Image (cartoon, rainbow, N blue to C red; front, side, top):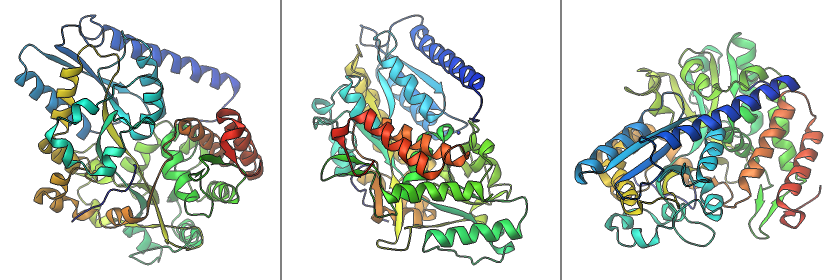
Length: 471
């Protein structure tokens, strides 16, 4: 099946005392991460000057195994092919947002900066602009495999200066996962394809009425879910309205939009009407794993707005094996707000491997990157990690075509998928989206109050000259 990759790809609200405790714990975790990097490898600094030692930093969250398997395979291959070299893997156990912060802290010092980093595509531009990443153009121009990466995947690793700073590992899509068993018990149609937001809410209402004890719908929201809340929660709503997050023509962030308020109102409605997890559940730091590894397999959640990677968690050898998931789960496209064209919405992202600018062993670091993302290792990772491939020779591989037959709608929505703004200010905007969602989800703010606070915070963060619309 040929795929075209388009242009680039949760904590309890508490008292002041709880906030102070969380900040103290976070600071301690950040310090621990820095200490880990500084002491790894018998005290050598990141990127030994002999050119024979490198350190690879990556996010370890829950029991996700495909990434660790890939990085270990590349480590073994590089060390075997280059006698005397040492590759040290540095797992950073953290949620997505905490991982971003810790990686940024590490990159500030040559003694802690990793030689290779697992880098989210949406951070490439900001991290490149901050001077954390090494341009790879001279290397990839000589790498025979580079031509196998589809053009838009190559673009995913570029900075604002047009240089390449990361190599894409794959991409993903998002859709509505639903339990066929629970839908049938509730008298809902299977297969199910909502055409509007109201159709989703109607199904959730039916689940609530017919199946007590079942959570009708999960939509990640608030700071605890991090980018999962911004991207596969809020933006999956916003991009189905008439108002964008970012105006590409004027290169400005949109404030004061009705679409933003409508999206917040959807979040408020499902949480205030009991159609979603409780705010306390949604703000659990492990919400992502709880929803996909416990609630769905145990029949406690009917609809989950989530990503194409879920089969990698449920497959044999995954973090939460679920042999019968294909008999139970199905996917539906996320509709636009009122069914207007193109009728459906998806968001795509993806991760890269990037080389740190402070490395003392750039050649070895690049050898590791090229080994990890060669055809053989990419094929294994894309199959086991349920990734939408970005290498043409992986897309065309019979093993991949066979394994990806379960994607279905998750592949179809590539045709309508959207991407987060490739802008260095995006991380600040994303953070304020999470704050706005959490405000309405917990009932601490009305939709108008949360939207107004968002507009003010974004304007302050990016500058008045970088915003457009009413405030």
